[in-house]
Image (cartoon, rainbow, N blue to C red; front, side, top):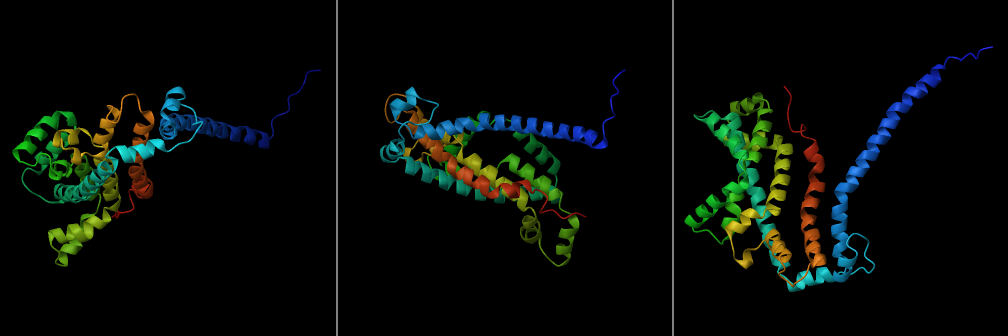
Length: 292
């Protein structure tokens, strides 16, 4: 007598189908966790090493500190110009961020809304500049700064960074998503072009503005190559330039991993805080637009 296989019930079939997406979810979650660990682990090693002594950092580079110490941080602040570098970076990053938001928004609005001869050529040039590696422009920047007699000044650190092509490109595209009817209504009420830009269009572009704020602050805070060619005065060193000096053995011979990584850990704090504060507004990219 042959065995008769009973047909699977509807609940069993439903249970079988429901397991597949759960299994896929588990696998995807596991893969994401592994990728997150791979991405975060170097930063964890950075922070842990900054709390080790120099001999322990060499003997045990990847593990937890056996003896936690803040000696590296104490020496960083007492034996180097780290507070001065931090102040210079803060000044440059804040001024560059404010200026870049303003000038990028002005340029983006002009390219998105105003009609003038050569507008297409200007935008094509802008896109072409985005494709040019920044290192190619270092020597021309240096020559311009020398000709303007602003080399070795805060102006040399700040002015060349006040406008960037990527920011103009981002905000121009966002301005184009805002209905023209909004501006026409304001124009009928007698508002000037700058008044429309400042009081009507710019507040609606808040997600794009916040994105530029984050990119500008992060970019100017982590900038190094421009600061190298803009100044050689020690009192104008920024964090990136100062930490690069530490990496070349400014304090003493040897690897000095704890001091270098302590400086690197402190450098990440302002950018991390800015990103966590504004990350929700960056993701909500459509909240400022009005749909027709």
